[in-house]
Image 1: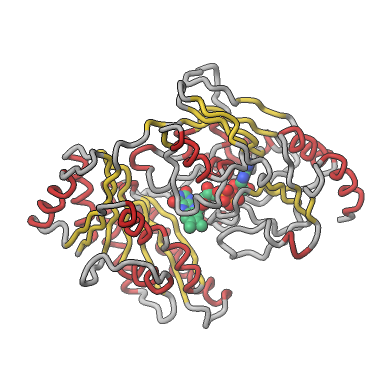
Image 2: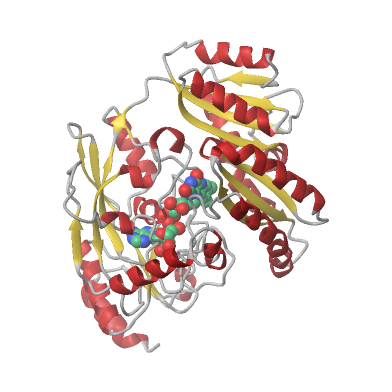
Length: 464
Ligand SMILES: Cc1cc2nc3c(=O)[nH]c(=O)nc-3n(C[C@H](O)[C@H](O)[C@H](O)COP(=O)(O)OP(=O)(O)OC[C@H]3O[C@@H](n4cnc5c(N)ncnc54)[C@H](O)[C@@H]3O)c2cc1C
C-alpha cells in the first residue's frame, strides 16, 4: 500500500502523536492474547474523539482501506489481530469516564476506558459495576461490548449485553449512530444496539456507551472449596441455589490448573494440606461476620459433597483466594503454548458432558499435550486449555491440538452446547462456528454484515 497519501490525510484528522507507523512500535497493536496468527498492522491510528473516528472511517470507506478495531488486546479469539496489512484503529486515547448518574444508576464512558477504572469509579460512588474478569486491568469497555464479555460475576448479573443501556457507534462509511440514550425502556422497533454487542468490530466501531450500575454488594464472603468429584461441584451449586444464597460467583479449576498457577506465582497460597482433583471459588453477598456460608460448608462436608473448605476472614485472604483462580490464564501463558476451547453446555447436562469429556481425554492421553480445565461452572462454561512446553514448535503443538479439539467440539455439538461461550469467534474459531450456529443463522449473519459494511472494510475475515 502506498501509505504516504493516506498518512498525509490522517495527519490532518488525528491529533499530534496519534499515528504510529514505526515498525517496532506498531508491533504492540494488531495482536491479542492468543498469539496464534502472525500480525503486523500497516499503521496504527489513535483517534481522540468520535468525530475523528468518523472522519477516519469515511476516508477508509472511500479509499477501500481495511481496518481492525483494537481495544485492550486481551481477546482470546484473534479478533483484534491485523494479519493482512490493515490499519489498526485503537481506542486507547478515548478513555474518559464522562458521567456517573447516581439517580438512574448508570455511567457514560468512552469506549477505550479500562474496565477496572469503571469498577473503581462506581465504587467511589458507592455503586458497583459487575463486569469482572481477570483481564480487567487491561481490557476496555469497547472490547468488552464488542466481545459481549461474560466473566466472573455472570451468575449474578449476566454479561456485558445485560449492562448496556445505550451505545454510540461509527459505521463503516463514517456515519455516527447515536443510540446512547439513558432510556431503560424503548420498544420502538428493532433495538439495533444489540447487533453491535458481540459483533467483534465487524459491524461498526463503538465509541461511547452508557452502562448500568447496581447497588454495591453488602459484604462479599469468599471461600475456596475442595472437591473429590466434578459432580460434587454441581451438587454444591444446586444446594447453594436451593438455600437462597445470594451467589455472586462460583468458579472451578482442576488440580493441574492449580499446580501450574503455583509454579508461576511465588505468592500463591496452598489452601489445603493435601491436593484435591477440583477446587471451587464460591463468593456470596451477605452480612459482615455472616456465618451462613460457614454453616453451609460444614453441612456439605458432613454429607461429603465438599472435601475441605476455607473462608477468607480479611481482605488479604479474600485477594489470595481469588488469585488462585484469576492467575490461571497468565500462568498457562508462562508455562508454554496454550490453545483454548471456551465451551458451554446447559447446566442440567453438564455432569453427563463432563463424564464423556473425561472418558475421551483419558483415552487420548497425549505425551506432550496437557489438558487444563477451569471456568465459570455456574454458567455451564468450561475453559478447556491445551498446553505444551515450548520444547515442541508452535506449529506441531497446534497441529496436534486440532486433532484432539475436533472430537471435543463435536461432543459439545452433541450436547447442543456452544463452542464459544464468551470469547467470541474472531479469526481462530471461524472454522467451528457452524458447530453452534445453523446454516440459516450464518446466512442471516452474512446479510447483516453486508448491510452494515457493504465494502467489507471492518475487521475483515473475522467471525464469517
Ligand atoms: C487473563 C484473561 C482473563 C480473561 N477472562 C475473561 C472472562 O472471564 N470472560 C470473558 O468474556 N473474557 C475473558 N477474557 C478475554 C478478554 O479479556 C475479553 O474478550 C475482553 O472483553 C476483550 O476486551 P479488549 O478490550 O481486550 O478487546 P480486544 O482484544 O482489543 O478486542 C476484542 C474484539 O473486539 C473488537 N473491538 C475492540 N474494541 C472495539 C470497539 N471500540 N469497537 C468495536 N470493536 C472493538 C476487536 O476488533 C476484537 O474483535 C480474558 C482474557 C485474559 C487475558
